[in-house]
Image 1 (cartoon, rainbow, N blue to C red):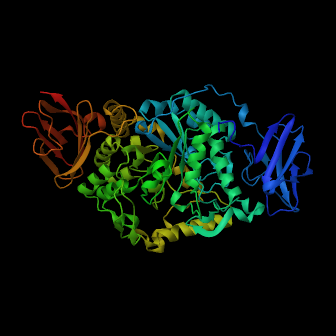
Image 2 (image 1 turned 180 degrees about the horizontal axis):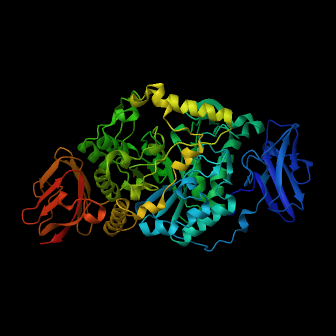
Image 3 (image 1 turned 180 degrees about the vertical axis):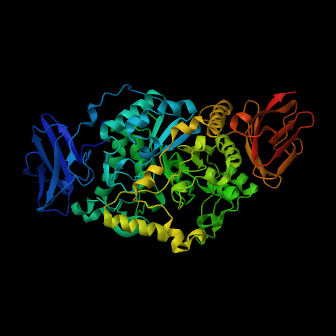
Length: 621
């Protein structure tokens, strides 16, 4: 199956010679009528096999507004609408996705061991909050050293602001961000600059505001509940096809290079094949050998089958978000152990183990959940894991939206950043962290007033189990998700990146990403000769080797670390070599105090005073 033959024309409105074909799955409906908004004309659709209704209408052109009337009710938007110019409650719009003038017929997509990803929220990444404005920032990211940009969900959502996980018009890029052409221009510009584009998609539930699917069929959802709403019924073949078609649309009509599947542990699947397995197989078959696809799961179960190949009984995904490292580092930096942090101690030996294994839980009992969690990661490449210091969840699910660098201080942040960017796993940055931005990332919505009030109250009630918010007065200080100010406060201030101390942190990120490129092995190779171990009370070392000189990173999170580098196998240079200090996270140019790190080449002793990281490279004696 090639890119043109994946049957994406089944549902929605598609151009034909001289007009458009309209097709909708509506098994619960007896009479389905197409309403053309400009004339008010009603056209009755013909029922076909698979409980689909269809009609071909001559003379309809791109830009025509339409809706469906169902057994006299409505009219309602098209569930597979490609464009919602007046929002998710308004009429759908016909468009020709194939008419966009792409500048390139082919482009490069990095292998997973070349990935450095930055996660972006379109609405808060720039003052304008649009695809076009964000496209204007892409040269900055290409220069920074990232190889892929990952957009938080862009499918149509209610109101003027949202994280995107309340999406309801799954086939229509948000009109707030710039709609169909805005997203196509963004992807085109990214490819022109050599950047891959990943898109976050939500297939485990739909939002509550503007979700019209149930009016067309009660078969879209099951009685089971996810933490965010009714579970999608992937046991129903037409429902599967609806979501498969959506994924295929992003890959072919928008040319995105990969998808990040949100909360896959909440994709409740009765029967086989698992929807992830089918998504992976169908998506890869649709592009064949013509291009590489990057498929990534967000999944807290630590199940190795997600990334094992189908030949080994796995689903064949490329990588999985692995949050264990983040949780250990958060506890080490802040001392917080509320909620899911209960399972983590932030000890250097446990951080080192997580670096070696990709995740920490491999079947041990979780105190937080009260049951065992995870499977062994043996045989998985380091690039099977996505590691981060912050992401939209870890900041935005805090009551006040603090990022880790707001809590840890810049010395610790620079040290942890050195660890992340030299970790052989795929590093994920969250927009603004590379300059330790001032702005928080808060939870924001724009629902209709009644639902919005419930969201505000529910948000504040949720934090009642945390020590700092047990009183009603404390909870009243939590920013209101419905307030426009909450959204505006979360926007990045790009000007501060040029000012100290932010500019120093940005300089560190640029140099570390350049160092990462220079010290990696051949493309597609397994992570060669990687080791990690505890050093002292609050320090750890990890070493990357291969064909060339080894690189050693030593990270100290507190107190003074004094280490004879010849005393331990992990820190001992090879015969005929000695260590040279390449970089310290506390150099003046990074905004630090250079006397924090000292290396005596003669005695091979390394001293790190306070939180800091040192990067050393072998050189011939």
